Length: 260
Image (cartoon, rainbow, N blue to C red):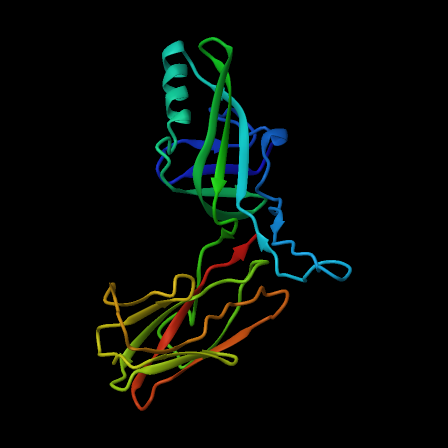
């Protein structure tokens, strides 16, 4: 398999599907679950006295990514060391970031180990491995894009290069003694906590958390309408803005391209 590379933040191993002599290859027929969407899940509640069921929203299921191939080594000792390294990727159940370079696109997902297997084909030189990685969050993320690219603004058009709604992160800076109000469309995020120079606020729409200088803020949130940045192919741009409430400054927003 060509043009595919997989790596983990916690490991120095590189699983390389490119051409040439590689220590850990990726077999095309043994790479699954990355390009596919997971199954949609929903509660199926049938009408008691009518045809069909209630029309309930569905949600993406978790993702299982499977990949494997040949593992080359120069000696029985190096083969055993490689086996230990491969099967030792996040073996304690912790979460790790898995980065996949595939068909010209670099994306990452947060995964936990489901299963690791290793079978020797030629003692001391060739083995076959397989890793199964479970992603509770089925979304895949690209490098976040910043709007505006430099400084801050009071209004900016943002977009999401992915194919799934993205959850942006806002940074608010300046001098706003009366707080501020962020907005996108009809949605609002109103804060009464003042912004002081040199002490920016950060607001994450994914977690709903609000920080000042990296510390969580308790209270001061007057209104919280959660919103998303729709995929670029559905809505080319989304205008997002801030009401400074008589203060000065602005905001920037980071949008991670989000895919399923």
